[in-house]
Image (cartoon, rainbow, N blue to C red; front, side, top):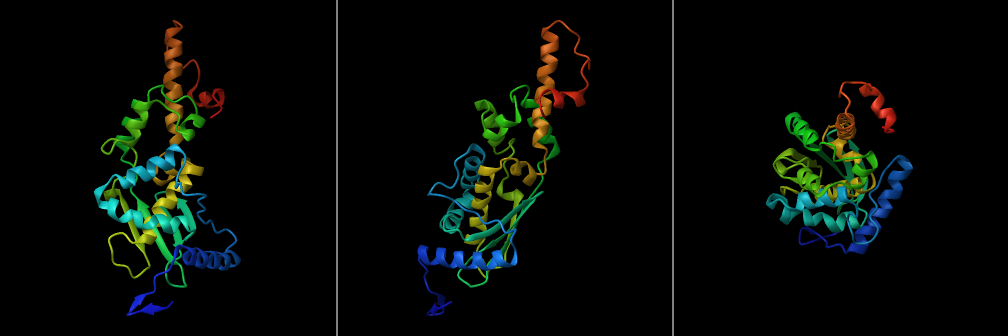
Length: 239
């Protein structure tokens, strides 16, 4: 890496992309299971979960002036590897140095009380897992899910991160790139959101189906006892 007056030389987007591609090829030889973030075009997210994740991050003043630094990085394939686990994400990001930086992001589990309230408020409003994944649910649920106080998306106080780079800023561009990378992952697999928040997304479906079945039995003039065992509901609706 070359320097000018003690500072790293400015690298164009094309140079950063070329460096990232070179590092990616090296990493693939060492680790065939590497999972880079690839974003086609200028749109960072296209589906409801990815868009909502990014919108939530950008809505906080703590992040608004910093997270934009990561856009060009993630668009130029600098996030060489990103893996999402329960409550955390691990990534390698190509920066100005030859060796990629290690980034770790941890997210607090959703409060149990808040999760139970969300499940209750979803009362018969979600018909299938596909509907949940595609973000095709009533507008009031969109508002509920994304509400800053009562919703599911994490606040800055619930997101913790660390990067091996020498940048002492509150949020470096490598962390910002990974946060946008998570949005891209949610675009392709929304169920990873529930993994990050350490909650069971299918519980929303099961509860909604159970409530709907109870309502159907009641409307049919039948007692809403467990004529159908709860464990069989999943078989009936293909869950």
